[in-house]
Image (cartoon, rainbow, N blue to C red; front, side):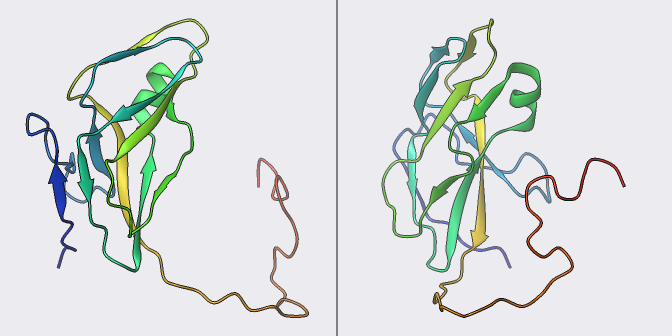
Length: 147
C-alpha cells in the first residue's frame, strides 16, 4: 500500500508532485516561478508547497536526467535532503553547468525529482575494528574502469 504524503499547496495553479509513469521512483517537482539561469549560475527555485514526510523517512531532491544531459541543469546539493520534521516550502537549488547557454525556467516546468526513502534512526557505536569485506578499504577508483 502506498505511503500517504500530506502536501500543503501554496500555489494552487501548480500541480501536486506526481510520478510521470507508473512504477517511477521520483515525484516530479515543478517550478512556481519563471527565471533565467545564466551559464554557471545557480538559483533557489520555489515549488509552491510544503509536505509532512512521515517519521522514519526522508525526502531526497535529485536532478532530472534529461535536463542534465540536454542542458547541464543540476541540483547543486544533490541529493538535497528534506528531513521528516521540516514543514517549510520545498525549494530546489538549480545550477546551469553549461558554460555558454542560458536556461529558461518557466512556471510549471518539471525541474527536479523527489524520492521518499526509508531513513531508520541509528545509534552510533564506537568499536575497535570493523568486519572484513571483499572491498575492504578500497575507495574512489579502486574497482577500475573495465572488468
